[in-house]
Structures are given as C-alpha cells and as structure tokens.
Length: 220
Image (tube, rainbow, N blue to C red; front, side, top):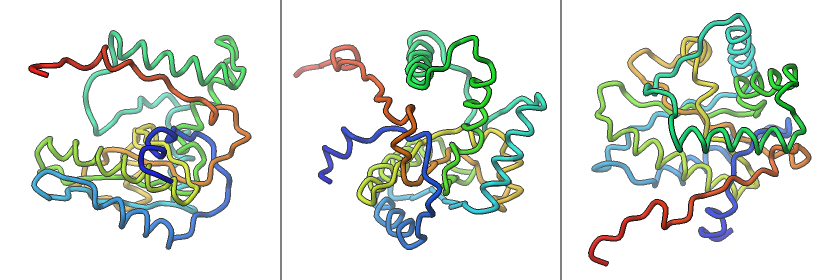
C-alpha cells in the first residue's frame, strides 16, 4: 500500500475479529514505526504491548469501575472539549450511533457501546504508549508521531487500529496488569487487530475540515 493511499484509507476501527496477532508481526510494525521523528532524536516513547488475560482483566476492571460510578480520569490532563471541537466530537458520536441504529433513548445499547471502549473495543492487542514524567511537553508531539506511524504501518499487515484514551482512564488498573511504574505517564492506547468488517461502526469515515478553514497563508 502506497503512503498516500494508507493515509487516506486509515480510519479508527472499533470492532475486531478474535484472531490473534502474531508477535512477530507486532515486532515488525513497532520496529518500522520507531523510525518516526522525535525532538532531537530523544525517542521518549516506551511501549507496553498487552494481550491475553492481562488485557481481558484491564477491560473487565475498567468496566466494573465505570459501572460502579468511579469517575474516569486521564494522565493526559487538560479540560474537556469546547466550541467547534466539541461540535466535531458530537458529530462523530452521531455518525457512529446512526451507523449502528442506536437511538438517543436506547440506554442499554448506549451503555454497551460505552463499555466496549473501556475494553479497548475488544481488540486482541492493546499498545499502551508511555513516557517518563520527567520529560518536557515536546514528548507529547513525539508520542503522536509514533502512534500515527504505527497506525499506518499496521495497514500493510491488514490490521486496523484505534488510537484512543478510553482504555487508559483508570491508570491504576492498567498499571496493575502491566507493571508500568509510577514514574511513567500512560499517555495513549492503540487498539490493534484484524478488523471485523461486518461491524457497522467500522464503515464510518469521519469528515475533515477543508484546508481554507484551517490554513493561514503568510507571504505565499
């Protein structure tokens, strides 16, 4: 798959086949992806690749916590989305729910969808991307660069991904089953596996703003 084709075709996958992903394939994807750029080649990323019982247990305890009313948090920090950013977030939710025929009034299905996110969308593998808490904010840019590259390289192996934070929102649970130390910030998670093409939400293609809305030309 050509690079431009991969960029145009990449989308978030929110349902996966149960088929395991060979460790050798994951190793190759990560090895290639670590060619991603980083500030002054600091390569701040640390990856925890999780599957099997560990991932099942993380998902189970995440769901138990959210259903018990424990407020999810995030080590990413920051406030919620407002303004146009909130509008885009809501537009995506509408697209997803419409694709699955879930109405606003259907609380059981909406709850089941919410729980799926806390289970890493039932992916066979989740990659938790961390960095040392002593690092400056530039590490966040580097983590994004690596995450995007993993998502693109995965397409070569017929794998889908969802770059998401929902699985990380109870970091104590993640640390319990992965051994991630307290001095490492759990920034993002990539759900990865073979896409379930029969799952309606996987057909959703999100919209992008036209460049005239986001680009300012100066001296060109």
